Length: 257
Image (cartoon, rainbow, N blue to C red; front, side, top):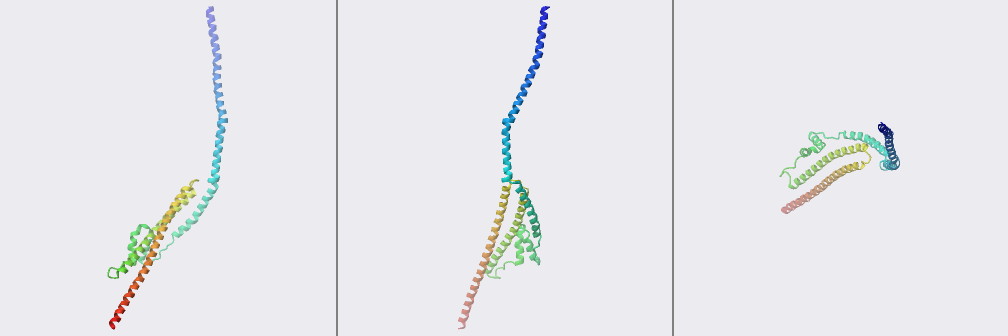
């Protein structure tokens, strides 16, 4: 009985000690976790937080520099407003200019030629037939001399070349105006930093326009050269006629003697 009683006391003491020790261990584990979280929070606020604050300050300075020096927001808004106002002013004037009727021909054939010349580059083949109807074909062989036929044919060829080039130039000018209008709209709505892209597009359109101007200038120079050649051909013809007349007079006077 004594042995059994002592065993019971030992078991009871062990149970009491276990009951007392278990909550203490649990409380110790929670305290360690809280201490660890506190350490992490303190580290984030002090060491890491300071670095993040410095990075954010640098980003703010860079953003402020971009908005004040590189891409100033106030100036961009002002430029957009001015572009929109200029576009509104010029758009109405351009519409009025395009709506002006510049056709002045009255006869059927001349009206057809004027219509073909103003219809764009899609009717280049019709220019030749309309031109021949208005200005007539080159005389057939035997009707005039070979020299006159060559001069007339050259003049017709250069005149047709100039008319076709002018027609293509008109079409190109309309396309350039469309591109310019699109660039104006993009400039009014573009984001900061896209100016280089718009500038490249504008320069490409400008090069195209310059190329067409050079082509027109070359055509004008050819026409002017042909005009000088035509004047010179007339002088040569006059010299030949004078020579023939002088020879005829000499033969006539010589025969009368």
